[in-house]
Amino acid sequence: MTEPLPLVLLVDDDADMRDALMMALDDSGYQVQEATNGVEALEFLRGGGRPSLIVLDLMMPVMDGYTFCEERLRLPELHHVPVLVTSAGVQDARLEQLGVSAFLAKPFALKALLDAVERHRLR
Image (cartoon, rainbow, N blue to C red; front, side, top):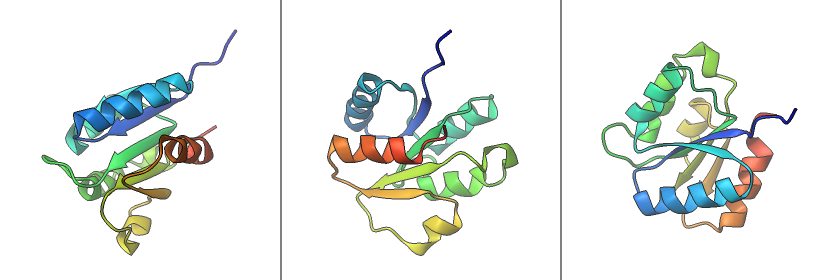
C-alpha cells in the first residue's frame, strides 16, 4: 500500500502565483489545497484539513498572513504544523513569535521554494 502524498496548504491571493506554485508542488509529488486568504485557510483547517506544511503569503485581503498566524495559534491541534511565509516584504521578529518556521522572500526561484517545502514539512 502506498502512503498518501504530503498535503501542502497554499494560501495566497495572487491567482497566477497560486497556479504556478500548485503546478510546481504537484509535479514534485505533493497534494495541494489552495486558499485565497486567511479566512479560507482557517475554514479548511477548522474543517479537519491537516497539511504537512502551510505556505503563506503575508499581504492578502480579507485576512492577512499575520492575522491568520494569530488565529492559528488559537488552535492547539495545529501548533505542530510548520508555516513557510512567502512575502515581498521584509522578515520581522513578529513572525517567529507567531510560530513561523521559515521565510522566503519574493520573488524566489521555484527550486528555492521546493527545497524549503521539503526541509520544513512534517514527515
